[in-house]
Length: 576
Image 1 (tube, helix red, strand yellow):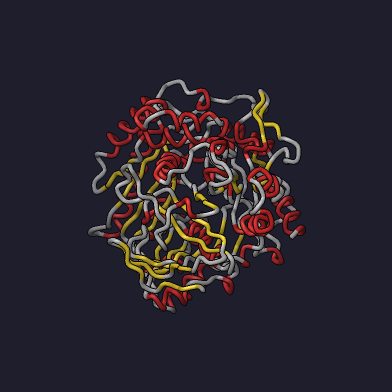
Image 2: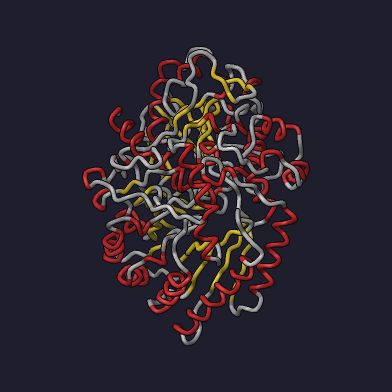
């Protein structure tokens, strides 16, 4: 029996769209997002996996979040039926953010589940990890997770569960060996460290291939759970496009979600649900304006008389008609990501938009009745010079002048978001160094000093400690699990802020072994190295070429073999 919960009240929270099932005869799965409810419910991937798992009659999937307050001892219970984690057979952790590893440790402790996989016998649930952070590098939690889904979860989760149904009553080792046969499923216990990297035990593949969801349009493309407590407010989250072909060299999500895939307009769902629930439409994607039918999608939403919210987009390239449609959708804030105020440095990132394009975009937004603008910037970038810091202040001053001139009166809020650069695995900048906490602090203070003379600018800064922790966790090997288990949070924080951390030092050798090399990201290492070299020379790389019309929904260009992803994606599609 499946019960669709229309109105479910929790302490201070009301939501619609959750599912509650009877447990009898079903495989119970806990879907855990180790962060607060409002963060988790704003993650569309988390919502999609929840939908997919609950579509199967023999599965019951319930959600688990970090309890509000977060102070131990944590009372860890499922959201739908208030059951402890030990009641479930499978515990699936969604980990898009490296810094949530600390929360995961607290959740396991509160649930009385041993932290290390080797300490959990057959009586304990299997721990399954997934999400962007673990796809980029699963090794920091290799001694914690029993298995990890590498890449996008829609396909491998269903395949994994199909095998699990037939082996669930065998011993733990046999179950894991059987599940390792699924492409994209990494069983860390099937590998042992050597000086040259990880080596597989018999029966395990030498590397684990990142899975790509194909065809995208066959899987849910919108969220089903609505609540005013989400970060976007009460919105139906819709994914018109997945991935971005711009090849920004620092961007982990850009490389993780290659190749870009487009949902045809006819396959984009969620607008009717938003009408029914009187909710906003939240459009999500790294490159929304790259969708060939983006203008028509905005028109459809306006015809439905719905309000629109959206993620960061390439607004410097928006057409006037798109800005008009966004304004009609009551969009009052747009977000752009120039990343730096220096065109030279921007080009090294492979962002080819000029200062003038951003200035003109800022002016046009105001002219179309979109008064507020949010801008994202990075500092501590490879190749950054002292002159690049005041250049950011000059750039912001020009933008504000252009906006105010167009508005004639009040131009709305201009928010500048500053974040330290973090060198991410499986990107061209995996060979870069992360600047010391002291150096980052000095650069941030210099940027803020340069912005003080610009009127009407609100500054938001990401804590340097958080960025250092992100790199500290994200680039580590298997020793990280021991660090997490044996140290308090203040001790871990001090370690992340230390000047000399081996895995945060520059890696100048193209053949150096990284902990995350166990993952075949499907983008060739040679391509990443060439892009790293091109960044230092300021040589741009063109975006992914236009796709063949017949393969537009899958986002595959079989004629392009530049990075290797499209030929491999074509092979995966043909194997399905």
